[in-house]
Image (cartoon, rainbow over all chains, first blue to last red):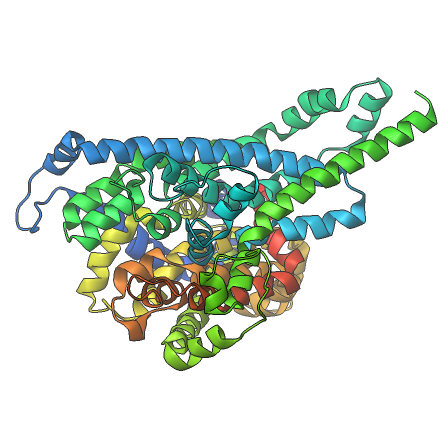
Length: 309
Length: 285
């Protein structure tokens, strides 16, 4: 199946003329293989590879795209205060959201895994609903939940004797609010991958440790977490990419406001590149994400190779 | 430890588990619940500040849903979403099935590299490339056309589906295709008559994924489409149903609920396929 075995067989066919027919058959096989992959190659080359290099080219142009300005767009961005806020917010958002999704997802997975078999299905099914709803539309629902005077959240706070909060109109609360929606949306994904990982841990490990008198905490600390180490790492890295690339939630809830305090790379690039028409600057903002994505992708690939070998 | 204390401890653990689960489920299900009841309340009840807003007190109304069909472009958005999603799913599945078969069975020079590239492309988010794609769509003359989405959505779908299907195809025993090849079947026949039937669960999981991604897409339509007659459900509901300074929460939530319904229903009926697709990454890879 790997390319090296193909070469070996082809070399063997050359050495033994009697096997020539096999060699020809294999060559036609690889021709068919390339042919069947052609749509995929064209799609990825034309609409992922080409746009990627094109976006690097665009980011090196001036606003009217008439002249080559080198790295001026990137240098300019680093002098803009708003861009530093975008930088900070992107990392705050990604860091806090991924951390909480991982903690809550693991808690939920362990709790569901403790239930008797039949009940697991229902709770797992209900817990996945946030992940299933289109994010743009559930963000719209959250927008209404955060509405300060007529909606649910401040009403519940009043019930508890807490003063109403400006969920989306105060910079700090707005940051909290968008991160909360991301945690709501992403926790189910963590839960489902961790639950699949928990199922793959042999039950004997838990049974023998229970006989040895290990407490629930010790079982979590010395069996569950080490056994899930690889899955936890891959899920966290994967979610880091998706969370850093966030767009829908912030675009719908705050549009980057109030006073640009909740912009992340995606929404800021949209604001500059599409809404105000400075395509090169927008492309440059997007490209700032790339090094982080590349590092995560590298470690995900390594983690997956390691777990399949 | 006696049997009785062990049993009561197990009981205690379960009570704690259900308590925690209840908190989670309230957190997870409150937004859809709140959306649904708002869409069924009268405007007076939504605007009024009396009583408990968490339940419907002044009677259920379907007026918001009726208005959605009669007074807004909602049906156009719905139709556009269907018109985009059907070809996207079909094209994506065709490309994925062909590629997955070739990559899992026809070992050829470069197959390993393509496999790795496919995986890396799966990790490329839409917010990285929407600006160059905006320019490319413009060059192709597809700006403000819903068909631009048919072109770009497969890039978000095909890598994952190919990867998922490679896993399913790899589990089909090699003896099966050798037998078929001896019988004189060609690769297309083998794919259609042997691989597809065996990999039905994988095909369903991949199709659900394709449908959900295409139906939920927001950034690309927001960037590429401007006029109301081209909008799909996500952008149409978010941008066009909001009119002026007074938000019509009832109508807005009715639109959001209806737009959410197809993927949620698909999930409810095909949950096991959905989950097997979602977790194949972590268990197989």
